[in-house]
Structures are given as structure tokens and as C-alpha cells.
Length: 431
Image 1 (tube, rainbow, N blue to C red):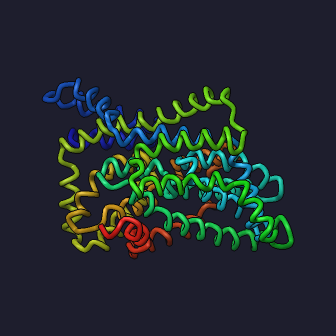
Image 2: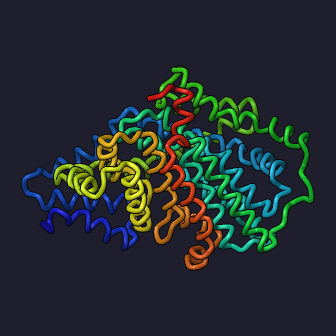
């Protein structure tokens, strides 16, 4: 019996030892094939390789490449100017700009980790220089990066759609309102904390409609990218997978001809950066594919499904129970790996109880991405804290009010499916 659970226990031990996530999952999966004499070892390699043979996953490197091109094309500075014009008069202006910038960049970077690194490098030092505590700066830059997981195109939504066999187009549109709710909750907490600590605005009054309009015109090409993606998918101009390639072409055109800040000489470096980022994601997916074989062989998903249904068959109570489980797991397991491992476990259970898979996908990804700022293994927490040299203890104390606000949003998304499903149903029709 212990041998049946050994790979799962080994994975948790490796996580605790801070083994890189991909290697921890792969080693745990390999241990199953070594223990079970009845399964040829070559199946392990086959499962690792076969995970890459997926048409939907082609969109990941394309969207990563599009984000890298837009960062190289100077899009961040234009969006930052727009954020400054819109909220520079608010209390805690730099922190408010951070959240607003993350919301606008959500459709461009496609990666919460990339967003956290960019925000920490661009705004973090300036916040510290003007009197914000380093821990607060690390918390707001990492928390704002969570919005990227919901604003399309999101790599997490693509991976969930692939595993759960759910329309990526509906997931993209379903993430918009939850993403905006997260942004509003962060801005509200930022205002409250900044008011108490005296974090000042950048100017005494609103910049004015003319200044906002001028900044908007400068950044309109960047803001058009999420619209380009959603309209193209909705009206069948291209599939979600093809949208990645079309977005690359679109962003190259913007960089070369609209902003004229991208040079052909920049592309080799951009391609190298994309290859490295994509490799890390795909290695994790390959490892999780082999680990998924172990879960299926041991019938762990149906066993867990049976246990959960004995606890409750009420869809709402079951979603709340899953949320609590994910919050606990999220403190120990990195978000993307948990998404890959847990999706095939929970989706079949919820489908039997008639829970919409789009609704559950948004709840699942919101929950697991919140884990990215939660000690001890939050990926965005590590990135922002490392850039700003913030100890984990200071970060942990500072993140609590922001975590509270995001958990309230998560509860609303769980209890009221219409928040997630209203826009997809409006655009695509009721599923």
C-alpha cells in the first residue's frame, strides 16, 4: 500500500527540499516505473515525449514570443505613461500604477512570472526610493502579476483548456471580469495601506482628460492586442492555437512600423529568451504527463472522486471544499504543476455534478495563482523578493491584507458563477 503512494510522497519531499519543480515531478514519476516491475521503463520516456505532441500547446511558445517582442518594442513605457496619467493623483500612486500596468500588460506577457519580474524591476526600485517599504513594493509587484493569469492570453488558461478539453476562447473571455475584480481589490487595499502610511500621490490633482487621451493614443496599439486575439477567436478568423502565431505577426508589425522601436537585429535575442521560457514550461508539462500516468494507473482520481462525493454532492459545497484543499496545497506546491496534476482529478467529478468547466477553470486558476504569492514556495514571491532583496518574514507579514482581499474575490467567483460565465455566454451563447 505504501508503495502505491510512494511517488506522491516523494514529490512532496522533493518540493520541501526546494528541488526544481520539473525535476521533482519527473523523479517522482520515474520512481513509480522503477518500483512497478510490470510496467516497462520505456513507457516513462514515451509519456514524457508524447506530451509535446499536442496541437493546442503550440500556442504557448507563440504567445511567449509575442510578449517578448512587445517588451523589446518599448510597450511598457507607453503603458506606464498611460497608468501615470490615469492614477498618478491617487494615494499610493506608484503602487496603483503597478496594478493598472499589470492589468494592461496581462494580454501581452501571458506569464505571471514574467510580469512579476518586469514590475519588480521597473517600479520596485522607484517605489523604495520614494519611501515605500521594500516589503510592500515586493508584495504589490508580485500580487499585481496574478492578474496576468486571467486576462487573455493566459498560459494557465491554455494549459487548463488543453487538459480539460474546454474551449480556450470561452476561458479567455471568462477571465476578463474576474481579472478586473482582482485589480479593483488590489487597488482598494493599496489605497487603505497607503493612506495609513502616508504613501503620497505623484501630483496634487487629476492629470486631465486631454493628458489621458494623449497617453491613450500613444499606447492604443498595445491595448489593441487583447482585442485582436478575442475578436479573431470569437469570429473564427483563427483558432486559439493559430491566435498565437497571428499575434506574433501582429506584434512584429507594431514594433517595426507603428512604434518603430523594434529592430530586426533584436529578434535573435528575443527568440533565445522565448526558447528558454518555453522550455521550462514544456519540461514541466512533460514531467506531469508521466506523473499523470502514475495517477491513472493507481486509480487515484476516481478514488478521490469517490471520497469527495461521500463528503457532499452539493456542487457549491464541493467547490468550497476544493478551494480549501487547493489553498492548503498551494502553500507547498507551485501553481502550474498543481494545475497540471489536479485538473484531471477534479474536472470529471465536477462535470458529473453539472458544474460548468469554464467556471471551475477560472476558480481553479485564480486559486492556484494566488499560491504564487503565498509562502513558502510562491514563484512570484521569490521573483519580487529577490529583485528587491526582501526577507521572507517581512514579505509574509506585508502580504496578509492583499491575500485577504484576493480570497474574498475567489469566494465571490466560487459562489456566483455568473461573474465568470456572463461574458462568455453573451459572446458565444449559453453553453
